[in-house]
Length: 183
Ligand SMILES: [Fe+2]
Ligand SMILES: [Fe+2]
Image (cartoon, rainbow, N blue to C red; front, side, top):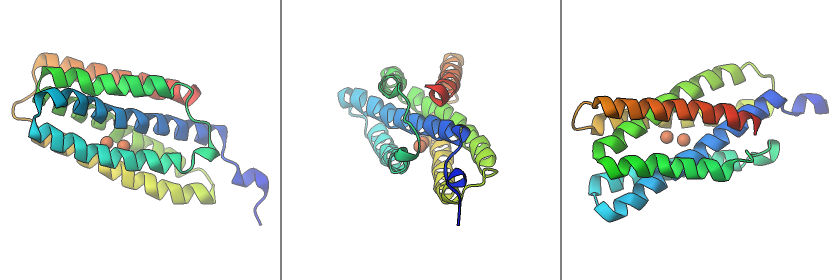
């Protein structure tokens, strides 16, 4: 029989789960931001793309919501939602390729984040967590698919300004992960 200490998640694992829960919250709101602005433009491609991705992100978020009693959610969730919304809304005002390149930049970041996180968390000895990690690795596969879909959807190579914006989004995502681990 397992002792209580081995069934408790370490502070490290909790902080990682908190960061990913915050990230999936942000992801849901990115697509809500895209869809809100696209309500003005009524672009069918963007609508289908964002709606399909939104459904997947909602499933990811639900995955973390289902286990949120094992960790404390970020106290900045409202802020992550607003930041996510703006990350989707701003490029939507600038054109389709901006939207696709933003999603590519976010998902490239998330792909790397999940890869490093899964590798680190797989070393944690916890029976319940092992089961959840297999779910997280499915999420990781979805993020990779999102990244490639966004890149495929681009009609032109990214402009320099677009690349700068993408860099800003990636740097912002990195700061958000660091903050969400703590707060
Ligand atoms: Fe996700
Ligand atoms: Fe995603």
